[in-house]
Image 1 (cartoon, rainbow, N blue to C red):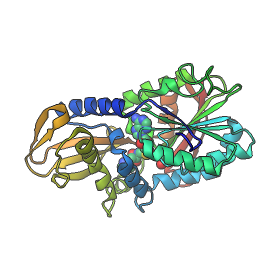
Image 2: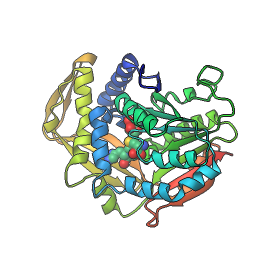
Image 3: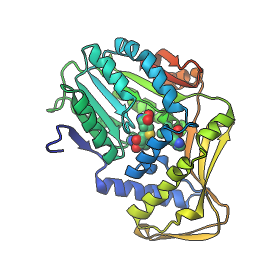
Length: 338
Ligand code: SAH
Ligand code: AVI
């Protein structure tokens, strides 16, 4: 980005983004039952809606994770005195400032690498961080963490050896917010192994995960009384309308959030309130939704402390520390190559 002082790498420039969205929408709308991947919620409007969700009284995860970070950021920086902080699914990077402060206070921080699918929010956050942390370089990566992990700065496929590489680099990869819970269990395993494959000795993962709790609190967090989560859920239809020339009528789809105790996840769906036909002109696709037909748009898995350690271990990552907030609502786990 000329003039802004941040370096930007784009793995999802508009042509790639379009192709990836088109493939996901074709697969998802022709599947039975239908399903759309949650990464497509996040255009600029979706990220703004998510930001509003984080301030809702019912949505506790952001406040709880903030509390865990505030209490433990200095310990995290001492355990992993990273020169580079990479943040996957970084969004506004608001809570991340607690980690940046701790690494700066430890005198080690040299570079921040926010990584997100939503370019607009990513670049705004990157510029804000650059202003707040003079002397720290910011390298923003527009990408999909399910596809582009091999290109993390400092990895073999990333910038080492090129102008952006840094000698003696030690990396802390933060994956906050519970976003790992938006991946299906098998995809989580693939993701964690791919991340482990990028790690050198000294690198570490800081993973934020929401914990299992009273289903009534969980459902309320995903079905707030102000209807912000409902608008966030429907936003995926606006993204498809705009980017794939579709004609979803947003009023024709109702927000659904349910707790699935067998899978230990919240499931968000969109329910077609009537029989209706939808055209996705960029795909040459016309499809009919039956009255009350439901389409899954997100899972949000809830974990136990032991379950997190076991998933990390299966991917070759050993847990070096685990913290929760005083109420045991949300966990942060620090893990290193086993
Ligand atoms: N980490 C922030 C934001 C969480 S919202 C927090 O804790 O509050 C989830 C973020 O992940 C969004 O910014 C979204 O754009 C991003 N995201 C979702 N799926 C992604 C993917 N597959 N690759 C990269 N970023 C993704
Ligand atoms: C980003 N992710 C962890 C959020 C969650 O809680 O699963 C997305 C979200 N969906 C509905 N509300 C918030």
